[in-house]
Image (cartoon, rainbow, N blue to C red; front, top):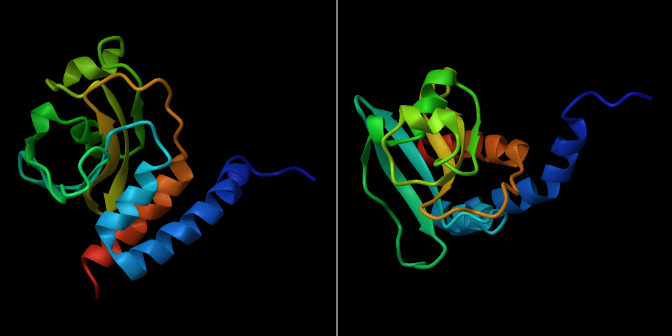
Length: 160
C-alpha cells in the first residue's frame, strides 16, 4: 500500500497536536505556545496578526523568560512574517546571513520558521512562528503540527 505524501508526518504530529489542544483548552494560549516551543531550538514562539504595514504580536512565549506574554509589534519590512503572508506558505530559514530570501527583510532575526494563520473565511490573518536572534543548530520542525496549531489558535483567539 502506498502512503500519500505528508501522511507519515501528519501521523507523527498527532500526539503532539492532541497535547497542544489539551494545553490550549486547559491552560491557555501562552502555555500552548510553550508546548510548541519545547519542540524547536528557537527561543521565541509567537502569534502575529497582519495590520496594515505591521505585524502585531498577540502572544509570545520566550523560553528564557516565562513571564513574557507579549512582544513588540514589528514593521512588515522587518519581519519574516511578511514573506509567509505574501507567499501564503510556510517559511523556514536556518541562517538569515546565508539565505537569499532573507535579503528581502531588514531584521535582526537569524533563524525563523513560520506558518500562515488564516481566518474563518480562509483569508490571510497572520502567522504562527518560531524565531531566534541567534543561529539555531537545526530546524527540528514539525510543520504539520505548526499548521494544525495555527488553525486552532485562530479559533481560540476569536471564538465564534
